[in-house]
Image 1 (tube, protein in one colour):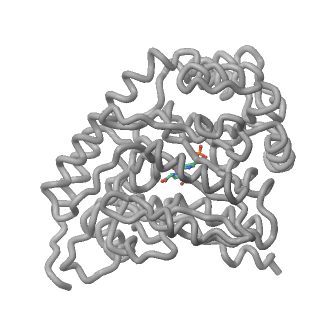
Image 2: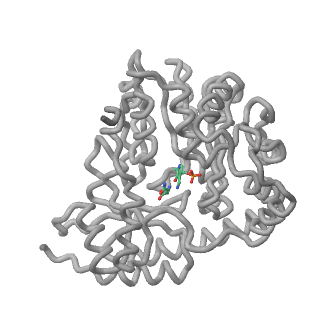
Length: 386
Ligand code: PMP
Ligand code: GLN
């Protein structure tokens, strides 16, 4: 018999919708991955590392040069300084960093606060660690939260608050004040903050992203998690990291050691090189995404699916027309099968609020042609009552 904890684990909606998109040959604006490759010069760097024989296990904590360049990048971009040896751990994507962090910190019966809409992995991670999720809703249209509601949720069993900034799926970027409020609560009640910042370099309209570690300067209670997948458009390489104080890092590494042990070696070398070119690369990367965000946001105004403007990440939420009687799951299936446009129903990102049932998530990490084609297909949806 399988373990009971598995009963709570759902299939990822991203995989489900991508399979449906493939089956029906739909334009895939669902699962979050670029439909273009990352830069050639990074691929060449990986090839060079392989040719040079960098093909055996990496150290469990990650290769030194990658941890070093990450510490330099953060020192330059945020003025945060980390110990290369004891505070940075390279993981198999942010997904593994999250899993190791939850397993390292959450005990059976501990409560963990999630802001919804939440990235779906958090829920499974809480369950796999034996924890109990509690939810605070970021209400549309501006995805703000009620500070009092957040404080009321905290009990003597609460162990951590999870923040995803910028947020997948809403595109919300937390303000400095919001992060400070969350940090103050964590201080008051002695909680961890698990901060998923995989879209840290992807904000729009010159909005600034603040890392939780800029606020928790002493790194008493916060863990920052990020990934190369989004920044360098190489989601399939699965190279991410967790940054935390040495005690928390030690606990994370204990789990990481027995989960993957180490992350693929040539990919780490290539990413160390990629980060050394970040300053030249970032303006181009951000400009391309700003163009995609602007195009999709303006094109969606001409459809029945009105968009909520995203300020970060490569996702946005749209409202399902109110006269449609189907829920989000039914609409997304119908759109994929009949209109040849795959999206992600928003309800899997929610647990407490019903708001998700009236929305779909759209990914715009796509070429302008793919975005235009997707919008064209979306326009073919007729909203008369069924
Ligand atoms: N966190 C968020 C918010 C994400 O959107 C994703 C992937 N899209 C991940 C974590 C997983 O990152 P990775 O692919 O590096 O495991
Ligand atoms: N994070 C991606 C998304 O939000 C998907 C990652 C995955 O499929 N595991 O769509």
